[in-house]
Image (cartoon, rainbow, N blue to C red; front, top):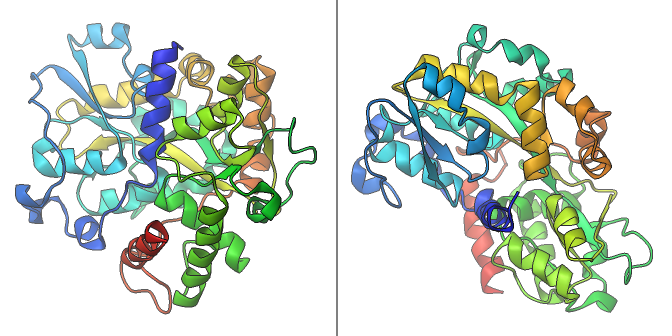
Length: 384
């Protein structure tokens, strides 16, 4: 992967999980009930009738843009790159339904996007390569289906780990609380995103196994701890690229990060390692989806099937330094760094340490705070 593509993908993923600052009204209203004026962002030009329109992360599109399949159907591929998941929702709400084919929702938003009428169900009979997905990923089916219908196919995974420079931090950190130690003041960094901060620090502050279901008191404890981290940090980074650069320049020695940083730092002659704090880390799965009323539904299924094929999954992992779901492809990865980062020999071990959470409630659910409460609380963190 070129340096340009690496930096572009890095910058895009920096905003990924946190920029989902959408109220429950935005999710629950459904596509038909929201006017154009209620949408966010810009609307891309209309695609030609034979275009397969992809709306998702740059770098992810290569897994679907297969010239042989497209030529067979006389089709071309048009990619619209996003800076945040909300860009997909904006595109669909703003006239994209009926013209967009493929999207890439993170696992936490699949059920809401499906329920809101933004996606069409996927016909599993048209995706024979589903049988090649590692059996462990069936554990996440409840997050990818609505009413028994599949709205997402997983194709890559990663996490938000605790990272450190072993040249300075001689013993691997054993807890996220190590980021709060006075001896590291000004030498650590938090993460530039709402979801990752709350999933991580909600678990640390409250000792809960499900940080997306917190009471108001637990939410306040998480915010207090996040503010402590902010006070101990060199800065609050604006992107993952900034975190990576600070590690490489030696400005920070510990921080919240992302697995591919290990390889990027190595390219610059700097060693960064991943610690395994006792509280665990935030694991997530990126999926591919078929947009509502997609104009090329049969072709979309064929491209999804290609995306999770053994050959394409191997190429995707090696190019993007990310986890993959095809069991055969996992066995074919020779790069020991990739194999170890994503536990290809035992994906269950990876997710044991990096559990995959559900979404925060969007509607009142007993004593638990809802997503709007989380966003409001985050403002206290940003102002501190």
